[in-house]
Length: 132
Ligand SMILES: [Fe+2]
Image 1: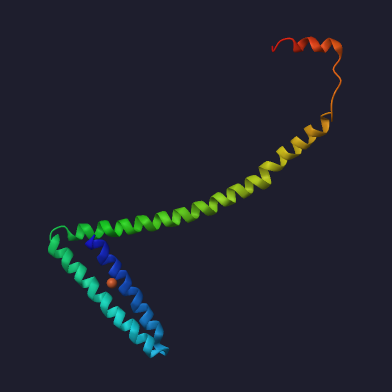
Image 2 (image 1 turned 90 degrees about the horizontal axis):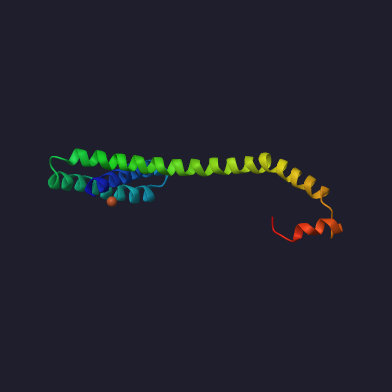
């Protein structure tokens, strides 16, 4: 948990560094981001210090596991988005390429059918005595 928190605080610190640097033209906003960056840097260092205190020998392993977990979650987000796009494309292609021949065959079969009631010849009614 501390490794995850450290990475989150580190990520936040890097973002607020960018925000601060972008706000060159707006000194009051830049000062707010500078203050938040100071807090985030403190949080980042604090969580790392606590991780080293709690798990002195395995802190690197925890950090790498947290990094890989974040990487895996990012991969899953990208894969989910890609699967959504590919699924939509595949269904669209199926709709416009595979469905029209079946619709054409169904229309052709419907044209061959007689409409309304049909008269059955008297000899053909014996087949209605049994099911098979
Ligand atoms: Fe923070």
